[in-house]
Length: 140
Image (cartoon, rainbow, N blue to C red):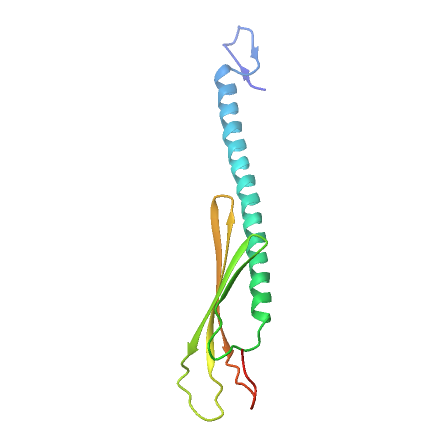
């Protein structure tokens, strides 16, 4: 509480002036606004991280579904629990040649989703070996 002295013989006034109250309310309003923005941003950030983690799990399960790629490649797409995914492959030129060298395919996996008005996506690229048919086997 502030005290104002009006001279040696005058009475002392106790309490806050109107200006002091206005400054205190302005500081409080700015602080609350900042806290509100921080809390809202934190909640949005948590949701974004959760969706990214789910996209990673989906991508891992899609990639784990195959240990090799047929000679004609891997081109597939689909949707799962609000996530759209697309797999495309192309032969990978390693520059290494020989009878025992296994041809590789570069796999490009795209997982996308919509979080409110913000779109999100995860892109992964990896290599998988080409599956050679066994003698007498017909690959469909």
